[in-house]
Image (cartoon, rainbow, N blue to C red; front, side, top):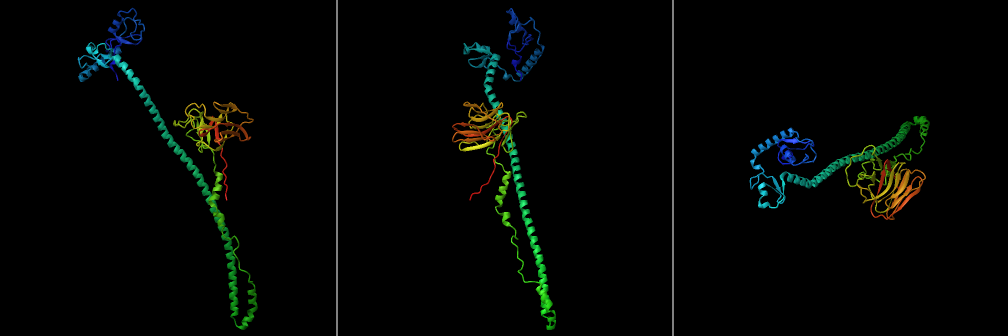
Length: 466
């Protein structure tokens, strides 16, 4: 919005009249400038003190036109709203001064009155400028707070989107895992039902064959009995003629024991359903892995990408930096991710595949260590940097280690109660270093890498107890 201040002469503090412009670009009323220069040997700018090479500066025609338009606009406003004219309520004079003691605008008559004896005054424009700057300074903390609130809101908006994305990604992982289990169970069910039906077909066919043979014997015996009974009913002479043939016919069917159902002729139901759930679960172990440490994606630096099962971590700084919420758990300046579970008692072990990476560190870190500031202490690690291995825990430990061959797999063993943290080279079974430290807070496993690290799974076994 344009104000009178934009069109005021720095000398008379009133709207420009016949404005002229100096080489330094400052403008003044022509009469004001000539009066200012009247008693001075050197013609210099009243504002910046730069020397003017001209005694008759050129007219600032553009500014003159703007001032005339501004005056016309003020005139119209004065006519439309006479009540709004800045006049002294006591003397009906224009308010041209500001009393610093009373902190109010006054007219020239007020200045000379007893009420304002020995008071300090400033021109209205100067006072407005000073108070405007003072108010701006007072407003700055509120503006800073508003900016901070807007930043927090933007982070919360991003957090809401991230939560939605987390839910969608996690849901996909869960669905995929259950799809694998469903497929395994479906395949197992079909295989067992197929085996059951094959056994049924085999044993049913065997019984059918025995029934067929037995039916043929029954038919032959029935015919023999019928023919023999006919002979027995014949007259004596006929009977005697047929007797010998009838005896031979009967003797063709010796009186042996009847056929019996062979052992194992029924379905082996126990084989198919005995310990069914246990057998399936035991077989399922081959497709199940267990990790002693699960990484927490909410702690991972924006430079790191975690695998779907939260056991692998890969540095993606050379590819892109992800836009993630600034939650309190997240490391911002270090390519670090923590385990999801911390330990404040007992013994715990986990293995890490470092795979000859160029720069990595594995170990434990205290729960109270700051996540968004420089970390000066509170962690214990084996650090591989510049081709050398060191045990590192500032400010007490910074020791290079003697390693015969590059480490590919490293075991971290924490005995919290005894205050021992050991690192072992799994391929040589050599103890690399043991920290002795009385731990006082919960410790979290951590991985730090410029490449790729992964937590190795452990073998799942089943043991029966009697």
